[in-house]
Image 1: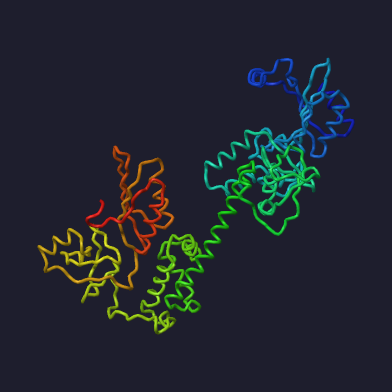
Image 2: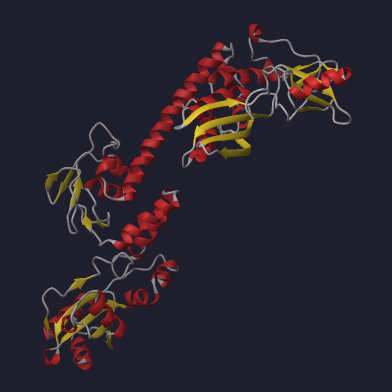
Length: 511
């Protein structure tokens, strides 16, 4: 039988390597037990494999069909339409000698190497310029490129796993464009999914679809072999939120969500930029003459990556434009002659006579070079009424005026008290304690932490307790670049589901 095939191919001048192979016992068991097939229903107990050059696959197929009668419905063309794992081969079953079914596999040597050794052994990794057996090396790596695209587009590992699992478990759906190009949009795909499979911008611009030359709705389900084209884009370009209920593939849904997320960020950035300009004008600042790097310094000091991130935070009400404008004014009045010239005379405030500013943002009356630290027992922040206490070897300790420790110290060692006040030109970060009370539920701590993270607040310490009455008390020590942000942070926490109280911890309250 093998000699007959070799002779037939030699007559047609087809260089080929013909080998035989019996079906493995495990494969027979799998088909009979797992797939429920009878022994007589297995047609590939004996098979031959024909390895030819890249242009001779279909010629070899024709010669074999001319020699033996093919079995109807048993021909599969994985060369034109490869499997999801890039497997390519022509499969056919013919009625061989003695009337027994014979399976024939026809493939090129390159396809055989990939089938036997795996896609990672494919020569396309080393030689990108060579021509593949079915359309070139670019087509050979479609599957791997798709996996890489998913990995770069989806940050959530669980969502990436779900997408990969669905595509591996389901059957292939192969759809063509009117120009003849094919793609795998995925099982349950609609014209919207197919548009996003071709290109993200094609998906964004989709307004209508034609399937096999007939106009269809966007929720039409595509079948393998369909030809799908989109209508010319109208005046509106961009997806609709309703599409999330229509699309059948996670990739298309992820692209739509990304589009709306980007649109919201851009709107918030524009609104934040306008709000900041208005706030700076109310402060009497020359908006057009501000030093170029000044706003970047302000954004960095507030723990934002860049100025665009600060504008976005203002637009999303994570930080107030008034506090940012006030910080810009303080920097302009900090004593730099080049920056100070930019301010109008009416907006200029008197400067202190001292030249060295303590790092804690507190001015000690009569002393400019003394070490100052904020006490941890009451964690004062700018705006609080404060008092100073001269310690032994640790400089001046600053307490809130109503701190219990400060009151006791003033009664016992009143001679060590010293007058202090907040420096208007303060910089740096401040620590405050926030207590949250809520009805206990899953994900409560995560929601509160996320609310603080959205305001770019650094959590230094956290303590959480839940009693028998299912009431949870949480205490956070947080670090703030601007104490005026604390009110916005507390309001954001109070808006969380099941939270019924949130406040800054001060002496005599909470803790």
